[in-house]
Length: 535
Image (cartoon, rainbow, N blue to C red; front, side, top):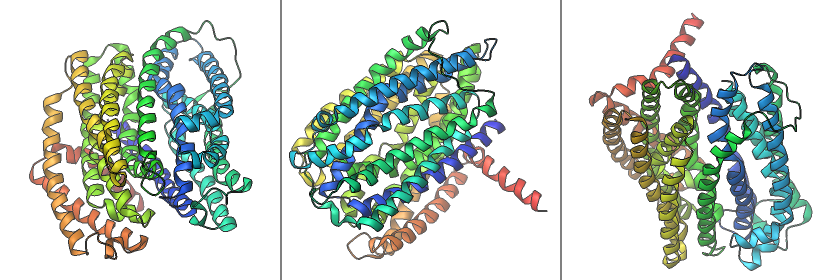
């Protein structure tokens, strides 16, 4: 458990640095093109397309299949090296082919994602530079998951830092060369070099993020060589397992397509796709730092337990991971809900629109992270079929709910879409845990929910305290200290966060939460070791 805690802490630190740089990148991007503008939704949609296609062809399939398959292949005489080279070669060919086809079809894809006619020319220009990201996103995930399966977690977590540094440098260059959001108003001011620097710079960052992972292969005893002999290493088994995941991802991305169309229907003068992407970036900060780091550290262990048939150890790891995630995620969601408007003000003066979207998303943060944990649990069991069904249920709810958002006023349409997504995540979480309980004979549910109610009670107390300090600081009306400018917004958010942390930890202490001590153990151990080293 100590090694898992250290691995989680190391992953979290890398993710934290990456996310903070990601915030800087997002802030610069908003300054460059505005948050609610003609160019914003055009650019936002052009970058949503490669991520959607990448998710269908690569992300979930690799996450679901690769780690368990590599763990099984590691018993081969060569330690799985032949399997890995064949799989990476196959992946690179598939990713390259799809990226090329998608780039050629850029105008069709832009129209499919509901970009208004007057914005399509600019969005298509962005898309030509953005769609090659499919290849590099797929390669990054493929190489990173190989390293994760070999228990080398650091490179996969820290590589996005390099991506963000490259993107930040090029965004600064864009602003110095072409100015700030004055170009967000219409498409005629966008030259070839502006589009190339903005969208091409983002693609260059992702390319560097992927290619840098090859450097770390030698450290885990691997050396990549192209191998087009794809038979004989049980790729057929991986393909069968991937089939359910592919179906799940297609359903998810179809729901995402409807979300983008509905949010774009509000028009460029209201919050749309770009605002939702930035709100989602904030939403994903605690998820990436906490949930992804914890799950990544536990995932390979759970796959090993499942491979040996040690279901008791599997359940123990799942319970520990779920409770650790909830301890931090419940607090993070509470803080961000209270500070949503100040946090949004850091990005844009249109903080009311973005803050409302952020709150709507945050309602689903806890169940979203728990679903992520449950999915990986099923994947480690070699079961990709069950996640398809509980995700399909979520997709049905999202599609039905998002379509009703056409009837909502344009000013709150994006927030309504986000709220539907959150409510669907709640349903999905309950269904996922119920199905996992049936699959494994139990998930230590009594202990998990016993911890959850304590976290929620402590979070409510923290919300009351945080909201009180927000009011004392002036509230969120125009000109008030928490939303006066980005600097005051950061100060206000920090004050609120500290107050809420004190109340949350104190409340958990009063409620005698055992998870508090366990969750803080890696941090306390690290601090103690540093103190002894200094002495």
